Length: 331
Image (cartoon, rainbow, N blue to C red; front, side, top):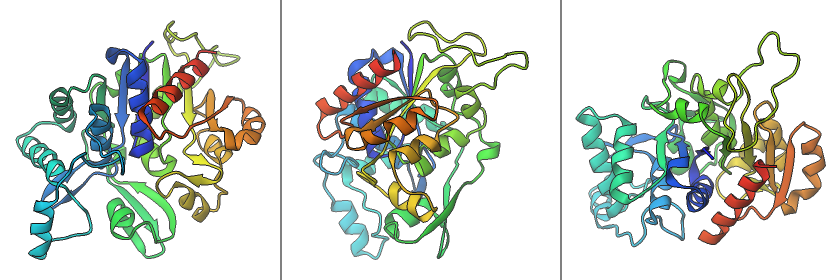
């Protein structure tokens, strides 16, 4: 069974890790948001790629979900003592990643090639791909102006009120080598419990990736092709099973500003709102048991629904949820 996971942030990294515990490495591809990427201290920082890779490698800080375990801060303290920017914390171990990534990119390697080399060094089995080798910075429209994502997210701590998002240069961007092929050959696609607005939306905005998830019906087709059973592959021009796991539980996000964004955009944050967000793409939706009363409304949208415990506190939780999502997709 070939599976592609779309991921960003801590929640996405955790479910990706769960899938990696369940599936053979060659059967899992993780396409990661790079809209959060930016330059800081003259270095190329890729927060979502690093969070996913560190988590898969067992190197992530278990308390924060991001950054490195057993981190130290001597360089950060030295730089900030000299007047350097202190709003984005970079630990010593993490700094090594950014230095070597920047060196390789400056030498002409692509972001996908650098990521693959890092994964080999860290012993990460599944294929981890950036959504694109091209820069596609997320810009946030707010009540204090248009802000680069990390300026909004970290420096201003998500305090400005958002009114929309723009992914700069996405119209000219190409999917990273291997991403489109992985989606086209997948038996199932999983949208991890990542922020729909700024983690999954940038991936879907890359030309050809979204259409690969849900090919338009042929002109002579009276109805969409039936969904194949997992493991059977996708018939030419046919559909693939696509499920999303809600990052919203009881109207709140476990981490990050997703619920705040929904509210500021005039949408009541809920699992149902997330299902509606992905309406034309999904065959299934997974929501937390705290929201199980919304399952009927989600099924009325034309997709299957599974209510289960979606909170991933420890590694076993990630594996359990991954198993449940895969079993749900196989029904």
